[in-house]
Length: 290
Length: 287
Image 1 (cartoon, one colour):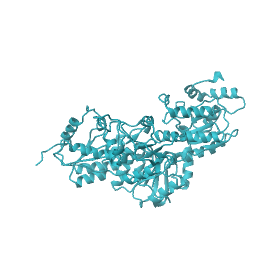
Image 2 (cartoon, chains in turn red, yellow):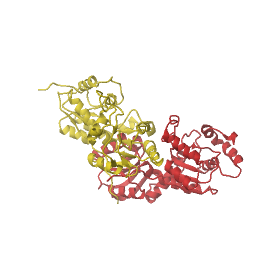
Image 3 (spheres, one colour):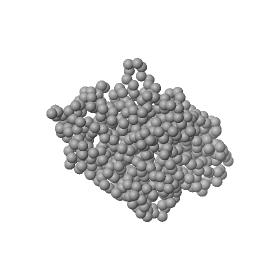
Image 4 (cartoon, chains in turn orange, green):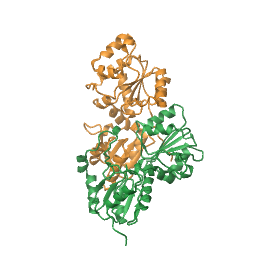
């Protein structure tokens, strides 16, 4: 195994060629490796793999590690890692970061007690964590939205050719917010606008002001999963105060994408049969006091 | 009769009284109006929303000093939040055009006061929030005798022992927060709390958690792939702690009252009033 000790950076550079997967396959002869799982994902996602992605890379462990079961999840929180271990699965396919920054930058985390705790837990349990973000979104259709739209129950209202716009039967802003909270099992839904406003055309927004400003003028209701409060939120508030008949439903990042990783587990099962594949919900950690 | 003062003179007075070197900043600039206009009155606020502007006009005050920008853009864009807003995009936006016209018609002058306010020795936003919570009496200050309290990081409090749920409910009722969010076991015992305001990033959380005995952390706005999951991991590692998320406006608005009180100590020509922008959100009742 010594000859397979390569850095994550090297692996990221090599994956496009398939070299790693061939090496790992030869080394393990029989056992499915994390590198083989990744290579199959790269083939099945059916879009060109971006060799420069810093997101869709190994975060803990590497391609040489044997896999005895796969967990897909929204975010590889410590709780999810613990539940994966309890269910006897050692490969985590996570949509979001492991070490609390978009690039999973760990150079300043060496002395951080949570980093040490999480890494030690993962290593002790032979966990391998690989992120699947950019390419799952870039897939056609977007794998997150495919699952999320189904969870929302709005597939039949989806606008032609746009996974991010829906024409729903007219309903009040309040009732739509209640529906969203219920089907996404979220306790942290926040809303801007008149509760009695009738809405019909719904658009999914973004984390950014630019993304939300591109959508709001064209819809009655902006549905956003996490946005910065000093820009997007104040923009929407001003739109309502300006007299525009608009509303916004703000859900947690988790509620906006979790169902897309349940969808990912289903998709993985269609081409990985050697080991069990399970979706573990990260869950909405937020609750409200009243 | 009081003397006349222009908006630029107000800013000059602020610079002179800051008590810290003035830094050129992308936030602390005039975003709208004529700096040479004579000021009829000053309104301080978290965000100069259309509602705040209308109330300023109704009160006969034409200068707004706000923590956030009227047109929602921060030049210093947080790296994890993607691309900055495109100014051309904003300039064509109907809400922007409406707001700009309202500001012009009413000859309002809007000046942002953010970075330099934060450069003062005392963290006015922290002090304001502590006062609004009624927590000043619980302050476990790091200040030595003769030093000013509420300097950056002087943020720990020892309220009477309570539970996370009871503390959250108490803050909820006191500040009337509709969109508060909490992470942690509601029964977590709390004897020591840390207070933060505004945007909350991982380095601040790491610093707070190095303080022994902190069971509750009260903050403004976390990034949901950064500080809040870090906190979830702290809990999953077996530590009994809770995170109370107030929302950015709720956590920062009391600081705008501090700005108003401070301005009054060196501006007597015109009335100064704090107008709360109010929390932007409401939360739906379960269906």
